[in-house]
Length: 162
Image (cartoon, rainbow, N blue to C red):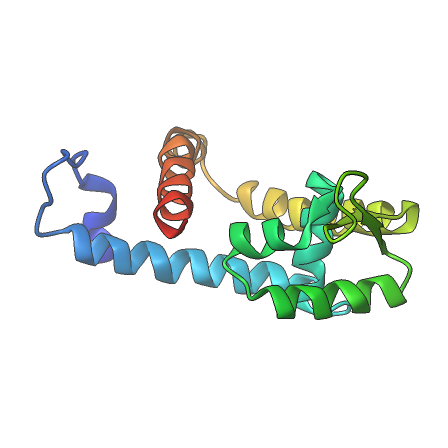
């Protein structure tokens, strides 16, 4: 979408407009660049991007089942298990058997895992805060106004994937 038209779009109705594909492409590219920028800001981390993501999920939502992480994040259970093993080797998470069904494994962050996840989250927040400082009051207000719509998009995508 041309830069001059970005700020003049009217809200879309529930009917699909001709602009939907263009907006979707622009949004995907922008969100992708944002995610890559945040990952690059933590380039010195000893964890891979996938390990940081799984650690963050476990620290935020754990104890959590491996299958739940995989389903919610659209990942392969085998890959999640491999990542959890790496995090476990680093003493950042621990596996726990389910009290009702020993075949079920939950993953919980250790104290050092929670501490590292908090540090990583604070660093990403700092990078974003620094960038937001460069916005005008009007730009910041417009960003705040669009956040609920972005949350709704994420929820719709997650729901459609299940």
